Image 1 (cartoon, rainbow, N blue to C red):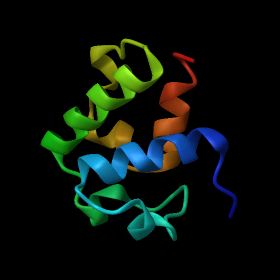
Image 2 (cartoon, helix red, strand yellow; image 1 turned 90 degrees about the horizontal axis):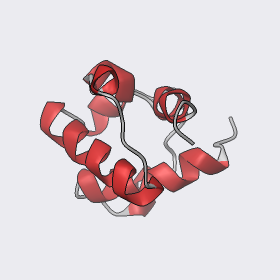
Image 3 (tube, rainbow, N blue to C red; image 1 turned 120 degrees about the vertical axis):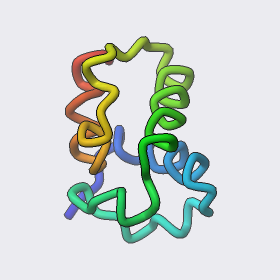
Image 4 (tube, rainbow, N blue to C red; image 1 turned 60 degrees about the vertical axis):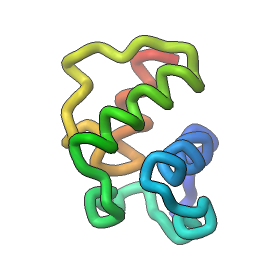
Length: 83
């Protein structure tokens, strides 16, 4: 399955938040559950901050749910409302 350009932008930020090397996420697929890679409520907030800073956006509180960030595809769908 192809990873979109936007998802490719998210992976380095995700790796940073999860304290992993980006290469550790090379096999990450768009629908893989990021919670299995260690994403939790605290790291989800960190990811939101990184996304906001990197993309120069402000994400609504309604999108601050861990479920909204549980896969690359969900993150991409959520970001589509902002970029």
